[in-house]
Length: 377
Image (cartoon, rainbow, N blue to C red; front, top):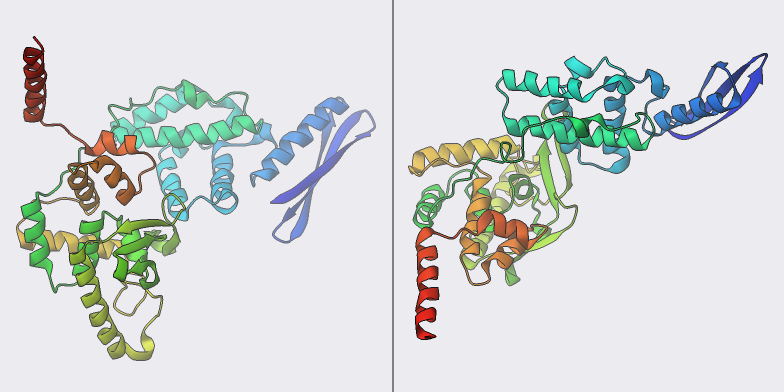
């Protein structure tokens, strides 16, 4: 809904407003009266047009939380440009809040109501990280509502969600160099081995691996450009869009991986000839059996099966990314190298998450200080 406009007028002793806005290629309109003066009518019109701007054609004083959130999510996806998979994640998480505050008017929600949602989620055994994620979504939604004049204040900021410490992500586990080498040797020649090897040696996310195209590779110069990612929207299918930061990022490929990719391309060309006219040409490096996008869950499931048969410790697919970051961080100037390879927004994030100093290193450090102190006497 866009292009909202309107006017106010007086009829008898009461004031009215008349609004008109574009909707799905046509025009819709609405009238409302009974205001005591022009100022009240103008405020009512303003509130209504704000609702139209975010896709909710309901006056602010009648707007329910469920109605606002539905329009807000739609606006995020189709106007702001938030990824469909992100909006779907918001919708799923917000289902925890809707039974409690969904029917309430936006203007009537209190911080106590929001805290009640947190308690209900905790009683159901949901993790603090999930509860804090809901807090972040609601804080953003009510913040937008405050800026639009729908609510007087963002009550979510007055609620008490789990602390950032309680909600922090579980510590990841990575393989040793020997375990990774054993796993890669074990999976050679098996289904999706090239895709998993690519993830394990580059640190790319699962969706980025699935979205990689041959045009994104420069094997002669050991380079790849990560430009798109694939997300699973369940019954709605797959979402193919920009990478997480909405920018194309170059990464480095080692010589062993380049050799794997060259062999994989030759094998893919042979398979493509066997499939013939039924092949769906999307230029994908790691497609499904007929050339189309591979389901993310299929790649993860195969990864788990290969872990079991390889006899290495169980880790998540995403932990392959952590493994690359941890290994690179140990190198000279490693934090900066890991930041660029993993495409983190700042080197501080890389330092906080991947650079760990062992107790032995600390002991060596304080002994080195002691040695220098003695030499200075």
